[in-house]
Image (tube, rainbow, N blue to C red; front, side, top):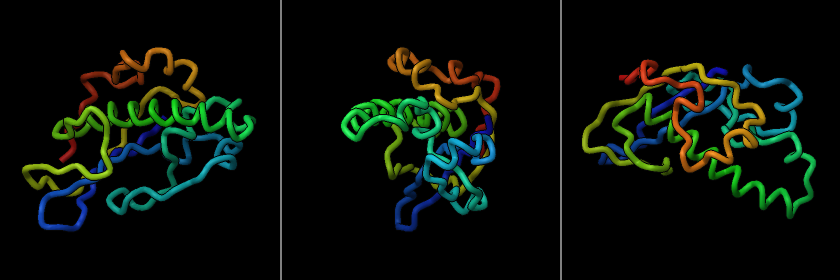
Length: 153
């Protein structure tokens, strides 16, 4: 599965950045794409169609649940998606040291915008497989190995 990993500078006086890991829409089957919101990647990635990680890892039953059950599962699903996104971003951009991605990350230097693509294991419907190991989840569990570090510039 192809993942687009970006670092985008947010306008301002300090070097504020947004880090993202998004799934290429082409990597997802058409049935799932019709059930979720397709977004555009940041400009540094060329505004290609993408999906956030949460709807990709959602189990098929998630889309059939009633509102209350969907909300309850959605909280756990969102937390796992943030954990996965953080693991991916941290291996590609080692300066991102937060335990969880924040909307804005302040750096003490200005590395500039960057984008890279990497392949990982298929995350489609992976919530049931990865949820139980949330606390010990590593980049290796996602199919990223230490030798895949790109240290994007």
